[in-house]
Length: 157
Picture 1 (tube, rainbow, N blue to C red):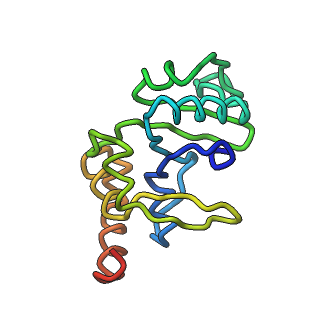
Picture 2: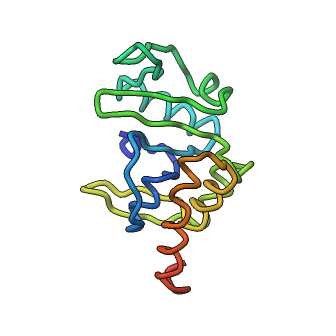
C-alpha cells in the first residue's frame, strides 16, 4: 500500500536485515522510516487510511482509531501501529540516524519481498542503529549480524 501511494520510505530493523539474508529471528512488526517532506507525509497519511491503520495499544487488540494528516504524523517521532495485515512502527529518527530518511536512503538497497519491491536499510546501518539503541533484544542479535556482514565480504557492502 505504501508503494501504491508512492510513499518514500526505508524499511529498517530486523526486517531489513532478514531481507538481506541475515539469520536472525523475525520480529512481530516491520519498522520503517519515511521521508518527512510535507508531500510525502500526506501520501503516508493517505496510505495509513487505506490500510485502516490504528494506534497499537495494550488491551486494544485491534488498536485505537486515530485521526491524522501529514502534519500531525510529522509532529510525532514514533508511531506504533496495527492494521489488518499486521503491526508496524514508523520511526522518523531511528537510533543513530538523527536525519532519518536522508541518512539512510543513499545506502539503502532495493529488494523484492514476495511480489513487492522495497528499499531496505543497508546492513551496516541496521547494525549501527541496534548498537545505538542498546536494548537487550538488539544486543542479542548483534553477534549474528556481525557474522553475517563479515561473511558477505566487502563487495556486498
